[in-house]
Length: 579
Image 1 (cartoon, one colour):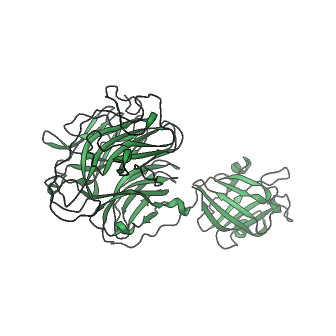
Image 2: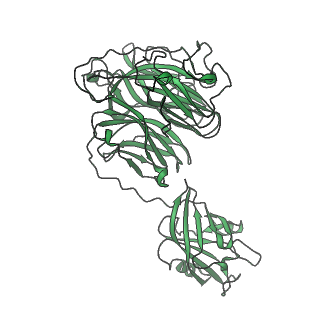
Image 3: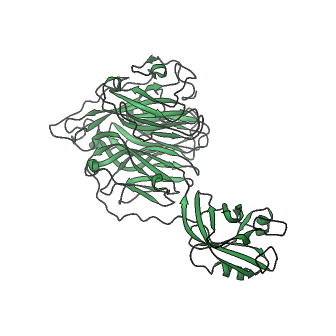
């Protein structure tokens, strides 16, 4: 059974309160309901708005697929009551939940934010194609605007979709230092990696944390990043405590052959002498689990550090605004607003990458501190858009995100944890220059109507097929070198037939396969012999980053003779990132 196409028919269904009309959300009853953990408190001031976390086994509070069957959520904003539903107390101030969108159109996104507030222009998950099911963890403040907005969230969708919401924890206001429910961020460490022996469909993988939990924190839950690798088909993971029945919930969704990572808050349970949680996989898939933080228990020391201050979601980084992606090996950094910069130890944020240049990993970390080789999310192909929820430490310089392969990077912060920033220990990151633009290219010269693919390889084969040849051994776009292109120019025609129409100041554009456009202006023209050394010397006689067009010619520049070559040279004006 597919968790996201065939809901459990044994669920008891009831309509949730609120003004949802025909698009009312439905809550199932499967899964354990966790009560609030009793906390020890001591008198003392805490940050205004601070709260502590009560983890839960996943409980489903919303599923638009039932009972309407094919009815779907059209592009709109709808309201989902959370406080007072399925074990979440009415005085909860924020929640942690897995939000799954089942895309019924093309590219789509979902945005989750406090009910009764204006849409903040942020996103909580992204999907790319029809039928794709994407789950992402969301930490979100609950609405306090009165009426049906109190204790609810609004979910905005760009296109038609189904939405499934599973709550894994809630936050209660802290009036003083607390023991349980504080977040302790750590450097991530791996506890499970099933490779090379892939678990079968329907397998449950135990994550035993004996000996790995700090005893002084009395850990009741962990923040984990779970990754599906080498998936045999579409399916989902469900994360739930030891000693409990598997709930009707999904923690991560994946397609066949995909690598997909997602964060979760996993409440711990006991099985015999072991403490930990289970990961159920619907389809055969490798399971990788990294622990990124702990949620303290009631026997932990009382403190005002590690408390959560929820905020209205706020976009603090979007490299699309500067119209340049971060290139391979690059790092994007953002500072925190003054209201949290001197107080925050960690931020909860949705990290999204889009227009990925190629497959690779992305790492969020405290700016100007040593970066560990771990991944916050992964892209598996060029052009991909993918998101993951992260709990990222901050420094006095803010937060950085490193990209192995390059992409646009977007960071939407939904809250922060008390404790103060880390001190910086390294200098600012200096990004490497963009690599040379990879072939194939497209070359355009408006003056004489050139619009052709540029390929490398065998010169005769390329030009005889009606394309432009990239002269082997000459530069690539963006490499601060001389590029040489060659094409046919014969009495019978050819793409370079009218090259002699060119005049000083004419423009040439090169489009690279990774989404760049390089713009050049003609600055020189020469007639040379047919010999390679003479041709290349003419092309390289103009300093700077240049492109030269080369074709056969008579000595008077007209078509055509095999004895001479017409060389038209263009100097770089600048480049644009079209990704």
